[in-house]
Image (cartoon, rainbow, N blue to C red; front, side, top):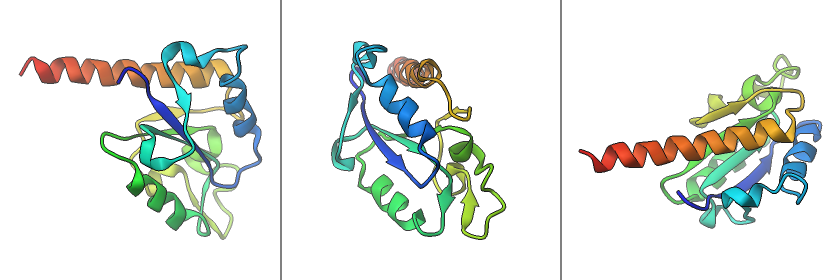
Length: 139
């Protein structure tokens, strides 16, 4: 994957992680140097970046968006809420972290994680994908 397109989906957290993700996309951090572009359509996205805990209200919509993404597709859980559901994990309408319903490839903990951590997580995913492709060609 040379130029991953990222789709951001907020499941209903406090928006702290959303602000940090948007900050990572600004010229100050210049995430485009890795070829990462923010995409508005799941049909064109390679990476689903999820912020917030999985709630009963958003679960079906999140699954539908994931299913609309073409293969290969990857999921990044950004922030403590997306990783584990905390501090909302014991609420009646919260199922927990994203991995309760989707396979997660990268976890980026923090409340909220800094833009540098988000960029590092995405860069590590890109590196992992490149290594998988290299190993696959050697078979």
